[in-house]
Image 1 (cartoon, rainbow, N blue to C red):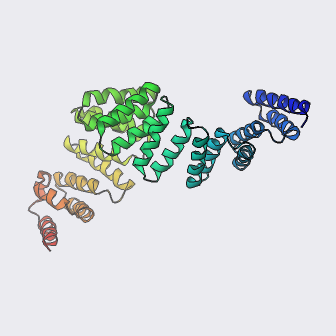
Image 2: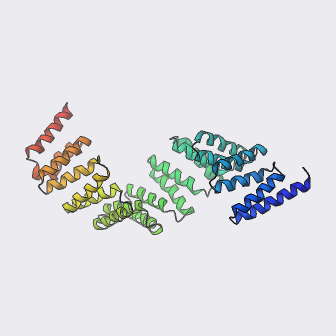
Image 3: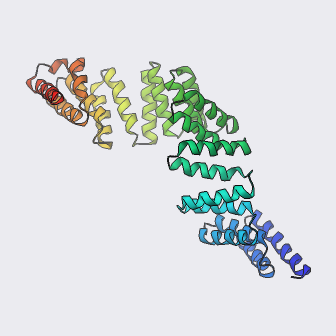
Length: 346
């Protein structure tokens, strides 16, 4: 190909890049097509076309453009990387891993390819192998915050809370506005019974994004542990306001109201939880406690029967639970306990 023709093709490609940066995809495509028409073996032009098609949501066209790129230039690591992302998005996870590895082979420092493999392995349940690739990600890019986030998730899942905290804290160093990381930090601190630290972390999450219902729910859990019952109720109400399907918020709210002997409102909260999940045995059991404290033996026994059918261990809890003292001598209550005990012996 004549040098003059190549130069003209490159000039068109430069113009295409300028329009692309301005967000004018139509003009960018027009100049890229002219560039490719003059020099069909220019891998950068095909790669740029893949970028535009991807931005426009034309995934098949983007895949074709990236495949053309690596056919012309088999060492074009970024094209392999982008192709891997799209193959994973299409659900071809094994093929995506193969392509990501090709990108790494061409450029071992392409951190996103390690991350792409890690996410797929994590989703497949291959957690330890995923950790290896997450670590590779941050080895080549120490600022890759999502890799730290998912490393933290893994250690949290494995019960290594202190290590999980270390990695979540790294996320918040890199991305101070990551409200989910602060929420997760608070949850771990709550599990470690470091309640004052937990409340500070959860408040940071809420200050960043006051509409994330999980943070309000977790704030309720922490406040409850601190004995701040009324504030916990307000937090559960806020979680429910933001996400009316938050079963745990209804249940936990009911537990506090039961402790405060606000029985009618407790029954209402447990009933909401049961409406969301008709097999939520803890809500049936606790609602039975409420009815028993009100002296409503019929409803208490009905709920207790359901709770026991869903979890036979509730028999043992009911034997010792003082909430049932008002109905303990009822023949129906004794029948449930005796029947359950016989079943357990058999």
